[in-house]
Length: 124
Ligand SMILES: [Zn+2]
Ligand SMILES: [Zn+2]
Image (cartoon, rainbow, N blue to C red; front, side):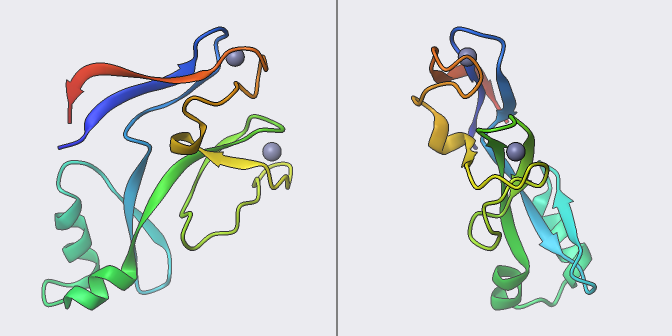
């Protein structure tokens, strides 16, 4: 089971969602993404695409939404980095970063501190 981290700047109040950087989703018959909350992701997957889904169907219809933010306007949102284009849904900037990519990098808000991952000691 993944560890729970707290992500944020070590100098200012810029904070990103905690957890392990994102959440799993499954696509329903209309192409809508349904968030699979943890625990019990697979239960949601099977209830959406059917108990008899093949492994391939599961792979095609599930994905991982990474918590991302825009370095320009600091808007936070989720993207499937393997399927979606990296564009901020608010300002249209392409300077979109996922939490995982930003750990250890300069904070987009104060441009002074660093984004750090703090182990909260909790395991989900
Ligand atoms: Zn900062
Ligand atoms: Zn933006």
